[in-house]
Length: 226
Image (cartoon, rainbow, N blue to C red; front, side):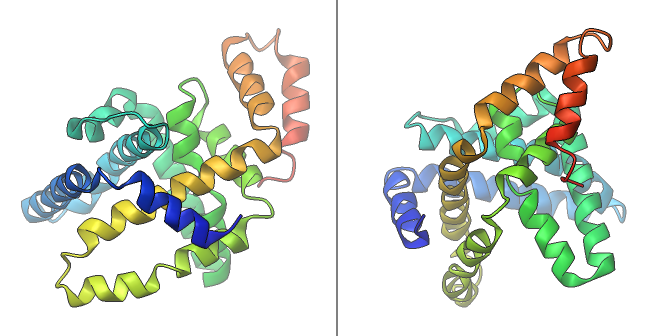
């Protein structure tokens, strides 16, 4: 994979979507401002709604990648799957904070390892949050350095956005998220993605007795993930 090619494809996919996505980020900014001004405990409320909003955003960008149209209000669709979105966000945040408590580098590695979890959650309504995090980590095996370099490639745009008094971020964040979506699509087939997803879905609908043998196999697949 070439990060330059990923960014080019991202710009191509966003060619006629900038206006709607700027509105999406304006809404997100407005939500953040309103919540932050309500109470001193606003960070708790933001922590609660961040997961569903993340899920809604990831769903939108997956639709853009597939060439589908989207509605601005779809950023709130994650609240229809509130429990999974919240649990995934809290688990991911916990693991990342735990990594940063150890050292900065472990925190960054954990954040990158779990960066695909909301894409997985959005595409698979039956997968459990802990399995989405585990699968993300497996998918990112061997790809963390390139993903980190993709993140760094936006530093120049980040600095330019600061010079525009923040206005540039309304365009930068969609650009970044589209690039991450393309990255996800590029790597998801490289780790027997479909087979693992099917196993997780089947496991979720089986009783503990029926799935005991499969559970053992699944534990073997994930034995090196945490």
